[in-house]
Image 1: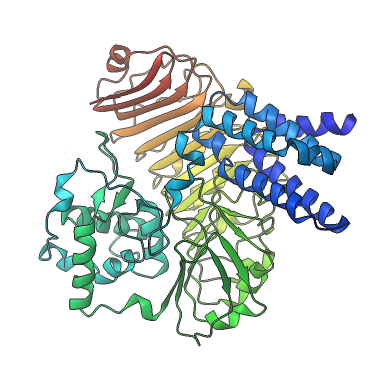
Image 2 (image 1 turned 180 degrees about the vertical axis):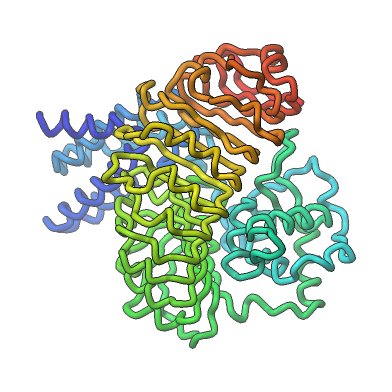
Length: 563
């Protein structure tokens, strides 16, 4: 009885950890059953449960309501697994999986369990329908305008399947890893990448994804007509054939180390593989590797990727030329080995949504070249490594966890030393200890233009500090803010120089009123705020410079878009 109560509480107390903890227990339970003697039929039922859990592992990120029922079910399943009652678990499995699906359907769009939406095309990509409203995308590519666009960036795009939905940040990170955009003329690699994306849109190579009126573009597609023209252009310009030094993983199951490439491969890109295995000494085939994209790139949080064993991570130390490493969304990675810090040329380390990841190296100060460190949605991480404040080239830091001083040795005030930092996301843990004026020091990071702060604790005291913003800030995102009002939290935003985007998702916010005018906000996004009472007339009075507003599940508003 005591075991049941403790297990249920561990699931109930942190919604972000519920599914990762349950998946970990499922693996332990499955292993113990296999030690008793493998039962193919029963093991198949456990596999069915594992697959269903993986499909909904991001459920609590995507929505903020109707979660209690699902958590109760997951807690019951966890208790079932802990009891090791094979007969009872086998009898109840079909009902358990149905209850999980039914409850998750209340939280997610119906495509969360729609297997038909995951049919892969000839390159292993997820099938997507091209958005029709933007007829400009069907016009001919402007070859003349493309003269100033790096042709290698064009050939790099061909790795993505036709019609695939591509996140802008994923494309830019790939270009950074392949050395196609660099710091030059007072522009960071990310700024150069943004410039290339702008030109590709302008000259009809890509088209924005989405039907709304949103003025910002975060996702794009390559329409079929442009895809063919792009292939012709790359061939005509004699751009280096990416197939000669790039390995695409397109099969559902892939084992690295089965083939012999010599040292010619410089990029490994997981286009469609869901199950990855590694032969002993697989690394010998890829000694000149610069880009290793094993993780998720598809615009779908239910896209599942897992590795047979995490032992392959130890061998990465031998990839001395590696500049880009993505393990995004991969299951069954629990610990990033300390040897990873030997990759001193690494520019981009993407660990986003590694839901089993619990441990990072103790000190990463030797990774001097790092420009992008992405740790967001790693919900089992409770602390940060030493040395982040010494990464002088860091431009993007996402998922920085504030916990106790022992678990978060670097303070926010230390980021003032990062003279290139442009994007920062901070997660305030339920055990966070926030020093006086820590968040006020953000105003001294003059390069910062994107800031996100999220909370895991609902206690208002975790939001009991003053936030002072840097003058060049262009986007502020607050997620699960625990307070009811911003009056004491936001410290005078009058001195911001630029029009900016304000995004607020989840939390207990009840009022948008502050002691200053929101005159500088021209883009507003409000989502999953059931306590907030506001209408469009209120917003117009609160935000006199407002040009675009997106409202979703706010009080009585289900969905609304205003320009």
